[in-house]
Image 1: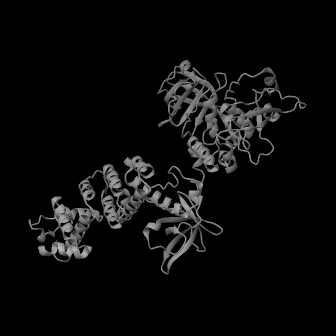
Image 2: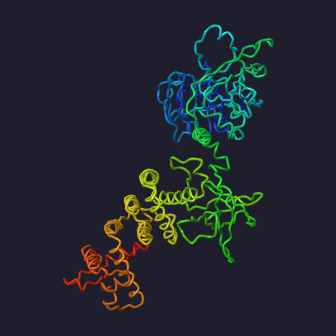
Length: 607
C-alpha cells in the first residue's frame, strides 16, 4: 500500500503547521479515523494524520486531546478546534472534504484560523508491505491508558500488548483486534475471524459475514479467554515497540468476564452491527451490490402478462430493491417486465390480494433471474421498517404481501409529499390500527394508479395539509366505491408546485357526508355529466334524479331517508334547492357538486 507523508505550511500566517503528516484514504482505511478519534495521537510535533475522501467523521467518545482542522478542496481551513475529551466535536459538513488530526495545541502554536490557506508538500513517497503500511499509520495512534491492576497480574502482561476500550468492546469468539505490536487471537473453537486488521488491509473484502456479525453483538455475554501472542515480525517493523519475550515463556491467559444480559435473536444482532458499520462508513457499503436485506419468500409467486396470457414464476427471495424469480423463461439482461405479486395459486381477480411492480432484469442465475424494482423517480421502497417485526412474521406469505403493499403505498405517499414524510410514516407505523391502515393503503395504491395517467406524474407533489387530512379521514372508509372517491381527491391534490389547496373544501364536504347522501350525489353527477357529454343542449329534467328513481337504483324503500339526504346535500350546496314539498324533491347537482365529483374521479378542472 502506498504511504505518503506531507509537510504542512500556513501560507496566510507564513508559519509551519506540521513537518510531517501521514495521508490516509478514509474510504480504504475506514477504521483509522475512528481509532484516532477514540485514542488520540502519539507525542511529537511531527505526528499527525491527514484524512482524505471523508464522507462522515464519527462522533465517538474520546480518551485524549487533539487538534482537528477541516479543509476544503483547495486546502483552505473551513473550521478548526482544539478538542479536549469532553469538548463537543464540530460536525463535518460541506465545503469540507478532508480533515487534519494534529497534536494538541498545534492550532494555537501556528496561530491557525478559519480561512487560512495551507500548502501540502511531499515528504516521502514509498511502496510498503501491508503490515508496514499499517505500522506507519498506527504510529500516530496513542495507546490507551491501562487500568491499574495488581502487580502480579501486570507483570504477566506483554509490554507490547495493544489495549483499546473500543477494540476490546468488539472482541468476541470469532473476532479479535490486531495492533502493530501484538496480535489477539481467539480460542481454537473459532470458525471465522473478523478483525480490524482486515478493515485496514482491504475494507471491501472485510465486510462482516453472518457468523462474524453475530460475534460483534455488544450485548452478547463474554466468558472466554484470549491468548495474547507477540508477533516478532510486526515488532521489528515498528520503531515504538519493545523486544519480544523469550520463547520459553508461555502465552499469557487473560480471562474476560461480563454480566450475562438478555439474549437477542440472531437477526437483531446482524442488523445492529450492520447499521453501525453502515452509519460509520456509508461509502464502503455503497460498493456492495446487495445494498438491502433479502428475505426468503416461500409461498409467493409473480405473474407477467404476454399475448398468450399470464405466466407464473416462483419468487425465491425479495428485498427493498428487487427480487429473484425462479423461472424457465429467457429474458435478456436490461429488459423490463411488469409483475403482479400475490400468494401462490391462480391469478387472483381481487386487487386487494395483489401488488404490482415494474422490474428490470439485472442478472441471470442458475435457475432464474434477479430483477430490480423500477420505481418512479424519487420513490424508495423500504420493507420491514415498521417496529415489532419478527422472523416468523417475515416468512408468512400473507405478511410478505401485506408488507409489500404497505411499503409501496408508504413510498408513494412520501414521494408525493416529502415535507410530511415523518407525519405520514408515524400514521402508517404508529397511529393507525390494522384495519385503518389497510384502508389507507388501498386508497394510496388507487391514487398512484390514477396519478400515473398524468404526464410527468413523477414531478407532481401534494400540499402537506391536504395529504394528512385525506389519510386521517379516508382511513375510516372500508367501502371500495368510497375509497375510489378519496383516492381521486388524493390524486388531484398533486400539482407541479404543490401549493394548491383547493381540494380542502371537497375534503371537508366528503368527510361530512354519510354513505347514502354520497351515493345520491355520485349518481346525480354521473347522470348529469353523461347527459352533457352526449348533447350540447340538455333539458333540465335530464340533469335531475327524482326520489323514486333514486329508490329504484339504491333498492331502498325508505323515501323519507332519501328526502332527508337530498335536503342535506342541498344545505351543503351540492344539489339545487327543492320546493318545500318533499314529494317533489329532486337531486340536480350544482356546479360545486359537479366540480367535487370530477375531483373525486381524479379529474382536475370544472366538469
